[in-house]
Image (cartoon, rainbow, N blue to C red; front, side, top):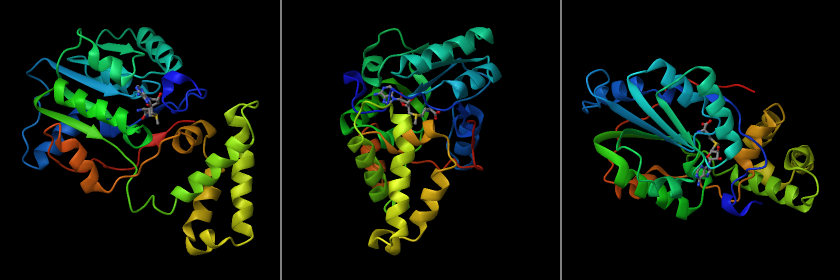
Length: 266
Ligand SMILES: C[S@@+](CC[C@H](N)C(=O)[O-])C[C@H]1O[C@@H](n2cnc3c(N)ncnc32)[C@H](O)[C@@H]1O
């Protein structure tokens, strides 16, 4: 495990996906539907930030579609950022700025503007409490008054029955040792968990949906599985606990942003 990763998986790259919930016009529209004044999308110079942007595919696509907005995005995995920058260059985007800073290093930079939007997709539940604290500090310092934050997270109680499965998988890949790459250890971990299901271990009997989830995992992209299940940290939130953490950044809840299921490319 690389020291700079704080237990987050970095030996395997994440998938290339576009998540429409990150779209500035949808975020503003969602706020307006709740009678909340949103950053104007046409009249003001706007700045948008994505923390933990992965392959940067969403940011690049949004930058191409919104030339009047300056997009800033960071992800501490340099492999992700090299790909994101190459795509931005190939698309000749002038309004997107990627860096491979950790969120903590990004917070210390003096060359960033204040932001109208700060967005995080697939990061808040998968990092340490210290790194979550950094994100709250970032929002506190860098979000403009009236700005919008979008955060996705794994939610309770839905994830309650899945956490033991995650632990079984995590322990199994650890027991296989680190001489083989993580991706090649995942199938054996899935097989082992399935065997527990077949011998009717009480956990599977008491949580009948877990077997279906496990079966579904076999068809999923392994890079996705690595990032969803194999980080050291994983914390599904009850909404009030999340709201409590974020209230320190003076945020108030506006609305959920699930318009329809997003797609993930493999
Ligand atoms: C599950 S991926 C989601 C990526 C992207 N937001 C998406 O939805 O495709 C989480 C990302 O957060 C990045 N990450 C984790 N901890 C980080 C940190 N402390 N600072 C910056 N990036 C981090 C990882 O490298 C990974 O690319």
